[in-house]
Image (cartoon, rainbow, N blue to C red):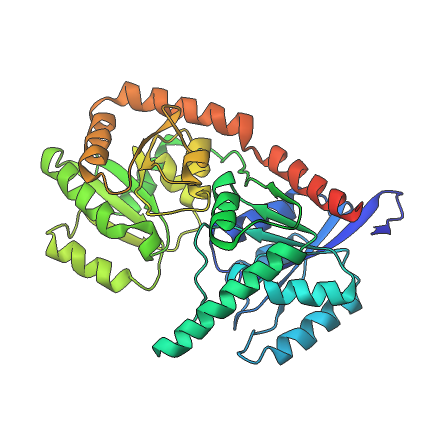
Length: 389
């Protein structure tokens, strides 16, 4: 920790990510970079992927730097680059978000005597690999298991974005030997759209006057349960034909989901919008959000919905049921309960006053527990506590 000219302490933190492509972790880091004054804590990012990602300029605009050091199978270049980077820029803390690959940065920081915080953002941690051969995939899985176990033992601090994440780590990898805590995300209050802007946005995405809107935001991966999402929507559409569903995101299952939409006869009713930078705006022109995920570490998008007063129908799964509370901003069901979620969606579409009441309860809950100020203070205090050890 170094002292600034104004007498306050200036912490230099390096975040380790795969890329800065849009996602819950990445949005949180960008929001923290903007919210914590640089005189108190400057934040840089090092990406282990092959590119820096679409949100890199947002880190730079907040005063940070972005580096790319691809983590190849032999790891030699990544180890060399990370050691050189940490030494040359005198980071006080390394904040490690590499999950399945988190053990390597912990080992590097341990050798440099630099505190390292390892954060986990999900309850399942598959190794990110293109390998198809069963033996090679098995070896990569073994590597992931050993890597996470090492990080849980030797990090200065282990954090989970929910209690559910820490419980999953203990269940799957044994006790967490390092100190640990929950480090919740936070969200800013969105700028409100004018009535005219809402009309223009609805028209631009293909929603006609008088149509209701269901919104889903999430990458096209098995975790998000798009197949269940479409089954729920098909039942809703059969009883409430003046409805459309907007899907925001991209991912490896996108082609398969497009085929399912055609097969279910939902073309023109389910609209794929790709990646968007105006998710808060889309929430303001929607009637509700639907998140039938199989699993979640937390579900940042759920508290974003709460921040806009948008009611939520979602899975009652570990992590997500901390971001969303049943009866207070959300109606929760088992992830496989297609019938129950369909009925809850229909009830909110048919009873606008009940939907508003649930949405307002969710807004109050987010303001009380997940505001940007609360999250900013929590992160800064976490860094301070690690440096005081």
